[in-house]
Image (cartoon, rainbow, N blue to C red):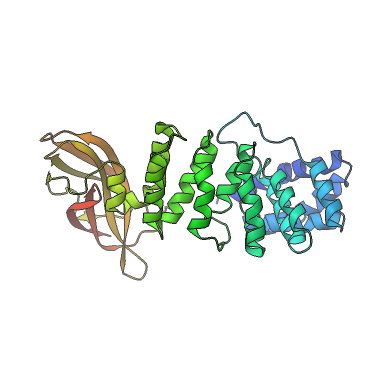
Length: 371
C-alpha cells in the first residue's frame, strides 16, 4: 500500500535538516555533517511536534552550555531575515522552529530577556508564535512588555508575532492566561497595519475571542469603524473574517454588524434532497427563497450530523452571500459529498437533518437517513 502524505516528512527531512546544519557549519559553530547524522539517525521515529523537540535536544549537545554563548552562535548561523518588502504569505521555513524550542528550554529562568530578544530575531525567519507562549506563561508581565513594544516594530513579522503569539486559541499552541482586555490593547495598534499578514492575524485573534466574548469583539470593531486608521476595504475584510464563526452560528448582532437583517421577511420553499443517502454519495441540495425586501443575504446550510455516541451536532457550510432584490426569487443548489474517507470530519450512519439558514435564521429543514 502506498504511503500517505506526511506533513512531518515534508517539513523535517534530510534536506531541511541539512539546511539547518549548514547554517551552523558556515558560521563555524559545529560540524554540520555530524549534527545531520545524529538527527537523521532517529528523526523518523517522531511525529511532527516530536521532531521539533528532538532536533532541539540534539542541538543541546552541539551548542555551548552557556546560554549567552549559545544565543550568539544561533544568531551567527541564521540566514538573512525574510524579505521585509513583502506583505503576506511569507511564512519562512519550519526547520527553524526547533531553535525556538531550544530557547524555551534554556532561557526561561535565568536568561529571560536575552531569550525574548532571540525569539524576536528568530521570528524574522520563522514565526515564534508557539515558543513565545512559554515565556508568557512563565512571566506574563515581563513578556507583555516586549510584546507591546513589538506591536510597533518596523519588521512586520515581529508585529505579527505580537498578535499571533497572544491568540487565545492558537492551533497547536499552549494556552496562555491573557484576558481579552489585555490583548485587545495590542490589536488596537495592529489593526491599522499596512500588511495583510498582520491584519489576518488580528482577524483570527478576534475570531478566537468571539468564542467566549462576542460582544467585546463587536464593540471593538464598531469603535475601529469610527476611526480613519485603516482603509474601509481592509477593515471590511477584517470584520468579515473576524466574525466568520459568529456568522456561521447565526449570531444576530454579528449579522447586523455586517449589514444583514436577521428578521428579513422571506418566502421559502421546502428543501429538496434525497431522504435516503448512501455513504460516499454526492447529493444535490436545492431550495428557493424570495426576499420581501432588498438587502444583503447570507445563505448557509446546516447539517445535524450523527456522532459516534449516537447524538447529533450541527455543522455549518457556507453557500453564498449576495444582495437580494425585493420579490425576486433566489435559486439555491449545492452538491454535498458525504465522504466516509474524509480525515477532517468523520460521518456515521443514522437519522440526520439538514437546515437552510438565511441571515442566521433557520428557514427550512428536511430529515434524511444516512446509510
